[in-house]
Length: 404
Image (cartoon, rainbow, N blue to C red; front, side, top):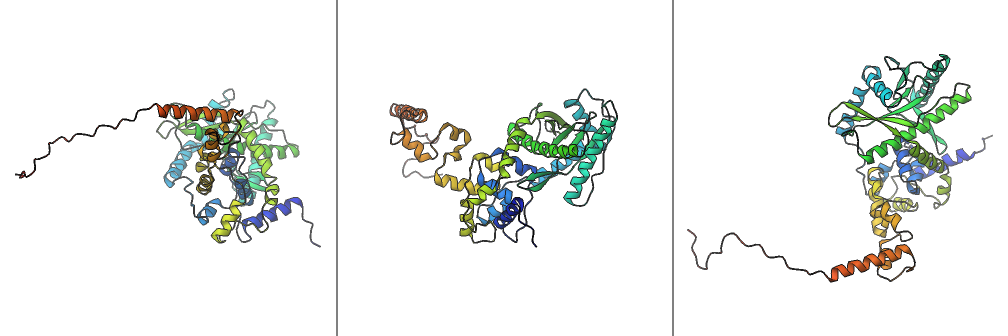
């Protein structure tokens, strides 16, 4: 007798149908989950990521291949820098953690580095949880709560996303002498004079917030086993090259806000069956479908394009083209969209500014008409003077002259 289909089983089956029966799912990583938090209103990305659709392959099939991703040079430089930071059992990394996150703890003269090798992501996840539990229990058993340091290099964490686990691999997790846990994020962009690019720091903070959420799930499971309740710190360590050298510099980043936003977005993602129920019957995103059918399937899901998508989503070029064709004001940026209120297209904005539509009592419409009047006044009073033609340095030869 077959087992009844539970809600989770039915959802996974539905997502597999959307992905395509013969198409393997693309596992979500922390970067993808962080990008979801950066654009929570995009239903298209939510359903595609929830179904495990490879958006890079999908973009190529739609005729808008993506240039999203890191260059091989940047990857090689990042790997070299990470290896340097983690050399000698993570001595330099632990020094930075002690200096920036926990200066009151004993200095990390030496640290435990557990072996996290196992078969498959499930095995590595279980091995990571065991190492975290052992490190936390040892510190609780020391009585003073003042044990040593533990450095976990590339641990594997699992986070429940849409009813299935997403396996995540942070750069490092450190267990402090008091038994608390900290996430360490290592990036290759430089930290110039003690500060880095705010946009890149924000992206790194959102990515680290995903790891904090995953660690909190591990901590909750350990608590159920009767182990001491570990504390997951919400201040993470961001390590970057100092200026233009290969020397590490670090900064503590508070990710409480990013963690809250990411948590809310993931809770919405676990209800993506609501999005799937609105799709036409037979919708499928398999890349081998005819271009017209695939385009119709993608366009059946609303998207919220913004210029920031160009650095975070493989479908950005496709969505930008469609957004421009509709004249959507989101093409100009989220800040412009927020200022325009209920006016969602460029045609609506121009019509309101020129008095063809819109309520004059609406503050947005009034501001647009005032701006249009000021522009017309400025243009009407401007004198357009034809610029003088540049004079030739050499005088023209008289007609009939012979060049010698």
